[in-house]
Length: 154
Image (cartoon, rainbow, N blue to C red; front, side):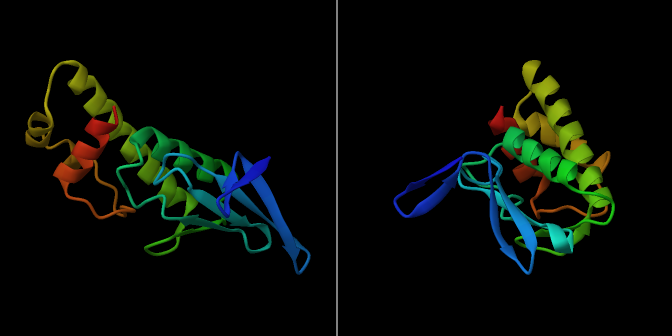
C-alpha cells in the first residue's frame, strides 16, 4: 500500500495510522492538489479532517487535482465534520461544497471559452469570478491569478 523512498513515506492510496486512545486515523494521498506529496488526515474520533496545504496552489498543482481532492474530502465528511486547512479557519462540509461548486463552475466556463480561443486577458475582462463568488474562499488569489491558474492547468 505504501513505499519508503529517501526517508519519505509515499502513499499510493491510504494508510491507517496507529490507534491513539482506541481511535484510528486515516491518512490519504491526494495527488496534484498542491504537490505530489499531498495528504489529508481524518481523525475519526474527533470527526476532524486536516487538509494540509492542498488549498495553497503551486506550480505542481492543477485544477483537476484540486477538485478531485476537494471531492474526496466532501465524500469523507458528514454534516458535523470539521475541516481544518493548513492555513485559515475551520470550515464545514456545506462551505466546502459551495467552494467546490464555485471552482467547478469557473473551471467549466474557462475551459469552454479557452476552447473558443479566448486568452487569460480576455477571460479577466469577462469578470467571470464576480458572477458567483462564495462568501468564503479557501485561498487568497487575485482574479487574474485564479484565472491564470485554472487556464494553465488545462
